[in-house]
Length: 113
Length: 111
Image (cartoon, rainbow over all chains, first blue to last red; front, side, top):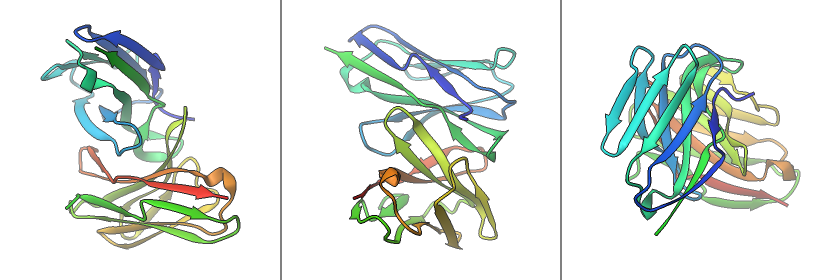
């Protein structure tokens, strides 16, 4: 089974609103990352947060990590139509597949103008 | 040039045929991965390699094999393709922190 699970599966908002996506994982992690995928294209790295960090910012992105709850959230502030994409969390942790980069199923974000 | 290059980008093949998907990277990373993506299932790990002599099965390795010909090259083979292997395949490489760089993907259709 997959290490990370994103919630919600799909999210529709208006331009200017904030978008929040959550990720839960199962095992201890070294770090947690968020990626973005435009339709049918390769994933692009957004941000990495280490297990000893609680919050990290990058531009309009804010990521939090709660290792006690094994969860992370990605907040995109002041969303734009160009933010429409799928967003995935990934953990570099030991899992059933060994120690490798394991992705969740993703959240599909739709931002309408 | 892209950091991670996959060939071919699109392929249609018949059931029972052997097919190889190729991946090369210019990042100089030791870690390379093959994933498949199906609608609603996200990315699932097929195989990964931490160096030329280290190959590991992922969660869905059945029906697939890999070859790490060099640090820069990691190929995925389907020995006898079947229709449920129709998917979007991604190769990736990652640095020591795990930050990954993806290829453009190969859309494979097995008819």
